[in-house]
Length: 458
Ligand code: UDX
Ligand code: ADP
Image (cartoon, rainbow, N blue to C red; front, side, top):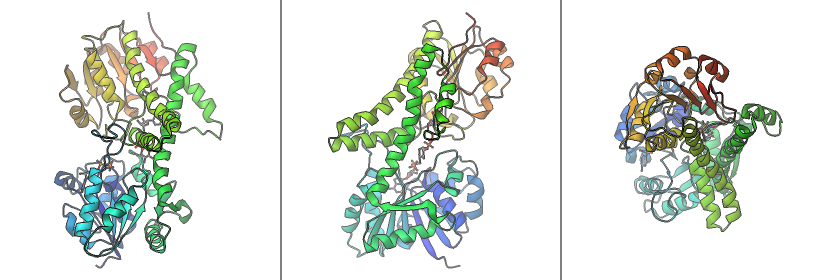
């Protein structure tokens, strides 16, 4: 069957894979091909064990794969055959040279632009999906314009707002789809092409358009705002612990003001994930480049509070457990940066595990989805680390449990049984405030949560 449009996505990661699966699922009239330089990723996308764990994703991939959704390593062929190319390669924080630790590392992305330029033999619309510093589209256009094949390219910015664990829902029913373009005749025409794709399932009033710089900047600012709410509530937790206030009660009272709203006010061990820190640092770097240091300092504060919160958690453990963790066995409940994902990028658990090992604690790690990633993250660190999928097995002979991830399964475990299998005195540090603290205390645990008074038996 002839397809109406050929869509290509370069980069089969957390963003590219699910986004393209949704487009293919919703638009059987388009052929969607996802390519990657990593052949293993492609093998996984073509297997029954997808490389990304997302509730609902298996189902939509199963429906579309082989019909109008294809995963391949043939990048050149994909470029040649496509009308629209989404670029969703990784843009991690730079680890070297100017802007190290702050700016985005654009090497993968630039390689992709050059690759498109070399392989394309006809006009294309290029869509930036990866989160990029503002004005990247301009750089991309410059690289593309230098091509010798006579092809013309129109670059659009279409930032992805999906959150992991809810990617399928976010893609199917997004709050908004943002499309930025040049405000020239060809830019507006390309914008319309992309609007038409999303309009297959997203109500038109939720598809918003803007100039290309606003679109790029909106993505950074949206993530910075979300992260700022978490740092704001976390910054109040030490005060709650000192004053016997409860952070859940404070958050509830504050969040019920409709001007504030109740989302992203859950205190914990700090935010993780591949986007928040990276995007804020990007924003900070951008401000510094324009000598807007007061603005840069303001947003950098969001990251600083996040680091403080993770360190504070370790210091609280140390303090509660009689100022030494050496030789004590600590069980980490969860390692993923949040529930319903196996992703551990920037997970607070990595920092906390590393610090606990420095304090010479022994670690036992349990997580329903993230143990493979946890092993990779902690590989090479000094100290004893054990891994168990079963939380009951993991907690045997432990001195303490520390909740790192808000997995639902941890709420309903048989805690009397766990208590009996642990060393006495037994401690629970609930880094996500998800457990029933009073009940745990009654079972015999010494309970420490975030932003609430501790409950101890001594
Ligand atoms: C985020 C944005 O939500 C999404 O729009 C963007 O496209 C990518 O970045 P994600 O990183 O998948 O998505 O996770 P998110 O649900 O935002 O959570 C990020 C971190 O904040 C997690 O570690 C989570 O545990 C933490 N968090 C979230 C809190 O500590 N408290 C909250 O109230 C909410
Ligand atoms: P994100 O969370 O932004 O989707 P990921 O790291 O999950 O990031 O995915 C990015 C993907 O892009 C990886 O699978 C990586 O192999 C792929 N990639 C990076 N550079 C290129 C390139 N030049 N061509 C094709 N794919 C690439």
